[in-house]
Structures are given as structure tokens and as C-alpha cells.
Length: 318
Length: 299
Image (cartoon, rainbow over all chains, first blue to last red; front, side, top):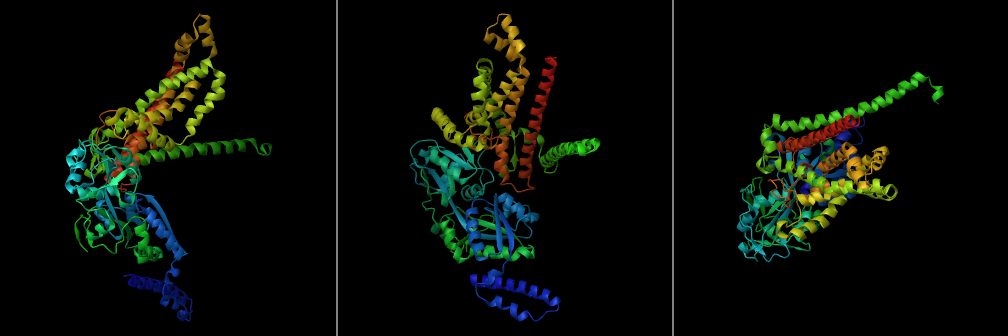
């Protein structure tokens, strides 16, 4: 895979070189052809030819990971600059659709947020997977919930821990804010399209996973959901779902169902001046070299996934 | 320098520069109002949302395309009124003390002290609110307030935030009461408290009202601190002071990062912004009305 990518990058490099030569040729100097082409065949140094600056905005959930990739990528390509900003999935998607950034990060498929006409020309680059699971306050004496029980809790039908095998006590549901990618993923996997009745009120709707962890740790009887990389915190406890542990292996095998792609959307018709850099950066995010960092940051690399999900949430074997 | 320049030219330059400043401010304000109104009205004129459903709808659930702003409108007004209610007696009380009882202590110690409160960034109030106020509310009310987040906590934090605004303006209002009024009252045999109550407070009333309205404006517009302590629940109406709720500003900030520009959700958020803008215009108009009335009353 990466071999093929390298050759494609070389191809672009060669294109660039040829264009430069064509420019020179126009000045009447054709003798340079031989001296310029060797750079194409030099293994590994082809990226040094990359020049340009791109910007990438959108989802904050995997921004730290992208920033790490940026640092390594810029070290390898000193003439490249990648500007990274936040703003949320919605902003990332609308900005890449407008063409004001080269890469728009999103936690959800663009189909869920954009209109059909805005989708035109967008390329979905899935760069890694994020697994999510339910967490409870450490004082809750339940360790496993079935998907049906989770659904009942988040629809407001199950309101006491005794109904799911715990000590009696009110279940305090803490939600992410409306429109959050984490919430969309969790609800798609757990609620199966059902919506909570209007009368159902969570005790809080918070706008970041860090705050979720704090609130769950501080609130007796509370339940919420976070990405795997937030689960190792004091005062909270991750639950198994249908007896399956929330781990990378279980997501890869398809046994653990609550996960989503992290997307980096680009444009098909991106300007030539930046297209090569954008492409190389996304290939770097997907490269085997970077996979270790992906795991370190709590995400799951694409490479070992045995299942895949489409925009409608259908899971099939990869 | 000045006498090297013809007087007329100097006048023109001065007029030009100051006029330009005014034009710039006017331009900014008009652009701002135009932008917010244009985006905010799109919800009703282009996306076809019924304004009645928007203003009186009791559920704000964007994923179901339901945009009822009433929970946030109620939330905003509830925290604004309650926080003013909490802050007002304390503010007026301390203003009376430092103006009528201990003026030099007021000027040298109390005033810098209270002005310090103004300078503290709202995120600090938010963090303190989250860890102190919410914890207290949770401890006092137990299961009725499982996280401690809610309208009550939001109002307490806001009360602390608007306290300096109301206090300093009240102090100025009391100081502005002419001393002859007090002397006249004493000459009639009134005690200090009779004077304060019947003379000073009464004649300072219009300015005190302005102080209150300015405090309310600040409370209405405050975002970050409230967002951190109120719980952020937008989907339905809060049913009590301990219920988690949301405010217009909090919903706006929380929503904007998730909304795609051009979508109905995005426009609906701008409509919330438009409500905020209109409300601040209303507050300003009230202040002007009071000012005019006060001027008339004082002859």
C-alpha cells in the first residue's frame, strides 16, 4: 500500500519537475532535462520536493493526533506548513466544502451534516477509528450493560440502577451537547434510530469529553459515554457492552459496535499548488510509520480493521 | 506646531478625524446589526420556520429539526432576574455604607477592592462556580440537584459577576445626590437612616435603576461562566430552579461549532443571536427612558 503511494507521490513530483522543465524549455533551455529527473528515482527523498502551505480545521476530538502528524510531517518536509485550527466538525465540513481550507476534519460522515449539493467534489479520507463506550461513576456497582439496557437508559425508560442489576439509586444521564460527533456515534450505535421522548431530561449536556469525565466522576449514579482515550480516569469506570470489553482488538474484530471513523475531507478539484501537499499529508496520517502514534493517542489505525461502516451505519466485513 | 498651521485648517483636520471616528463606529454597528439580522431572519424567510414555533416552541432538538427557543429564553431571563435579585440588596447596602457612613474607607479601600472583581475573567468565575457553587448546591439539595448544575447555580455565579457593576454605579448615584438635600433633611430633624431612606435613595432612584439595568445587561450577555455551571440542557423546559437549563448565549456558543454554515440549525443559532441583540437594544432603550424621566423629575 505505502509502496504504491510512494510511487504516486513520485509521479506527482515528476509532474512538478516536468512542469518546471517545460517552463525552462519555453526559455529555450532544453539541456536541463537530464539533471532534473534523477530526483524522481531517489527513494524516500521525493517528499523533499514538497512545497506549500495548507490549512486544516474542524473536529477537536482528534486535533492532538493531527498536530502530532503535522509536527513529524513538517520535520520531514521543511518547506511545507500545515496550519491546524479547531472549530468543530460542522465548521470543518463547511469550510472544506467552500474551499476555504484544504482539509476539513469531521467525526461524522459529511452526508450527515451537508446538503447533497455541498457534497459534490468532496473526498472522504478516513484516517483512523475512534472507539467509544459507556462510563459510569465509580460508585455504580454495575459492570456490564446490554445494548438494550443502554438504549433504555438513554431513552429514559430505565431510570433506576436496580432495573439493570445494581443497587437501587437513580440513574443520572449526562449527555454530550446536541450536534456532538461523539453523541451522534453513540446514539447511532445504541439507540438504533429511536429518539428519546420530549419529557426525558438529562442532568447535564456538556460540550467536551473532558468535562464529561469530570461530571461523571463527581455525580453519584451517573452514566455517560466517551472515547476510549478518556476512559482511564479516576472516579469513573468503563462498562462492557453485551459482555464485550471496549478495546482496540474488539473494535477491529467487529465485536464492539460503538465506534466511528475520523474523517479528513478534501476536495477533488483542489488547487494544484496545494494538492500534492494535502495528499502527502493524508498519506502520512495513514502510513505504517504513524500507526504507533495513532495507537498511543488512543485511536485505532485503519490497517487492521476487519469490518467497515458506511454512512448509513451498516457494518460489513472489510 | 499649532500656530504654524492656519486656524481654519486645524479646525478642518480636527473635524475630519473625529468625524471619521464617529463614522467608523456607526459603520461597525450598522454592519453588525445587518449581518445578525440577515442571518437570523433567514430562519423565518428562507428556511420557512414559523416564528411562533420558534419563540414559543418548548423543545430545542436540532437532530429532529425542532427549534423551539423558549427553554433558552426562559433560562436567560430566569438567571438574569434571579442574579439581579441576589446582587441588588448587597450592592445597594454596601453602596449606602461606603457613601453615607464611611466615605474615606469607601474611596480608599472598598472601591479598589470591588473594582478588582470586574477585572477577573469570566472563565475564573466559571471554574470557581463549577467547583464551589455547584458542589454547595449539590450538598444542600442532594438528589434534587444531582450535579448541582442549574438555574440557581447560574444565578449565584452571575450575581457575583454583576455585583461590582451594580455596586460601583450605585455608589456613583448616591454620591451625585447634592449635599444640600442631606443637610436639609438633617435640619428638619431626620436621623441618618431616615435621610438615607427618604431623601438620598429617593432622589438617586433613576440612577440606581440605570445601575440595575446595566447589571442585568451584563448578566444577560454573559456566556462562559454561565455555560459552565448551568448544565446546558436545551432540549426541554426547565421546571424548577434546580433544573439544569441553558441560556441563549450558552446555546449559541455550544451549537456554533457543530452547525454547518448555511444549514437551518446554523440560521436558527443566528436567530438566537438576533434575540440577544434585540434584548440589549431594549435594555439600552430602558436606560435612556429612565434617564429622560429622571432629568424631568429633577427639573
